[in-house]
Length: 604
Image (tube, helix red, strand yellow):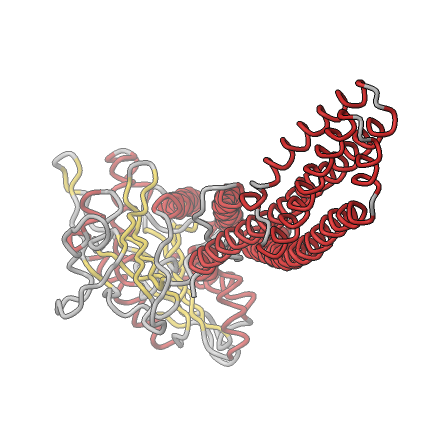
């Protein structure tokens, strides 16, 4: 049953009990009124009968005094008393109207009859006295018959009063009993009304005040401990409890919003700290390999619901090439043309799914079977596109979180782009420092770095490594006859031949002036001689012009050494240089192999 129904029933019952209590009180008051009426009637009848007795006695006394004394004053007094007695008797005859019973009225009538008889005798006695018949007058008033009449009057009046007292006492007792019953009933009903009212008040106080206040107090306590998961109770009544509940709900909503903002702020600070730490690590990277390790290590922490790839532009082929991946991406190709990505074409973040529908990139799911919510971020530094950051939802999670903000993604792409730009600039500076600007070959400084590594690796693995020392024959002639530009052209042409003939980049060096060095790891002496002969033949086949003039034949002298066949690993360059010197002394345009322990040098 609803609380409102219970309250309405309680209110109705209280009203009914209140009406019953009022009714019983009215009935008790009526009974008391009857009691008072009976007492008043008794008083009136007592007064009337007492007056008759008094008047009878007074008139008797005056009549006797006149008979005895004969004084007129007694006669006048007698007449007044007789007149008063007649008036009282007239009133007494109307006692029936005041509620006297027939038995009571019979006794009173008998008394009045005897009083009238006595009055007649008194008149006769007074008349006899006036005639001078004193004896007759005394006989009448003092005789035994007259005295019996007085006694009868007195007895009848007393009998009337006795019966009146009995009836009145009975009526008073009955009225008192009824009044007491109704009064008791009224008190009981009033007590029940008060008890029910208290119960209703307690019920309402408990259900409408105490219970809600206890619940709200518990909610306030939990909210004070910042436990915003607690649900504020719903109280729709328009009163202080409802206002309090509404205020608590508003406070909880504000707390939840504040907690959400604090969580977002904490998440933002954590994300910024993570991005800052990643940026610091990327700034310390010296190689692309280091950068790949940083990106693949931090990306799962920054975007745990996204897998992805880092692409770098291969400028020689104009192709995006995958450099690293994390969390097993499956949809984007390892290599693709920059024209296959809308992000690279537009130079901005591209997201085919989300709030704005867009066209998917061609490098994502080329079969077109799956609509992938991919994210492509171009990596740009100094307005030059250097690579691409590709992200997609993880395939191993049923509902991966992909709600990373675009602001973070743009900051991430900008930082990675700057890191790539720094590496590109560092590589360019290193290449400028380690490369010969005229021929494009590595210079002497880079040789010192590469040679140590290559020799140590060959020595560790027990594999051969060969070295060719080359020198342009009669190079001074080109400078003297045709100028230094012609000599530079010859050196550039020789550099191109060495770049195309080496298997690995960075193993052909300009040793100094017109001298060049070629390292050939894992090639033995026979293979190195074949490579040297190829170089010599290509150089000899060159036909160059400068300013419209033929430069003439171009030849090179080559010295070859192989470690550990001809020498120790640490003396490889010196051994090859000595072989080159012998090739020049032997007439140039030839290859001389370093001497072995058993065989002397031989010309090829």
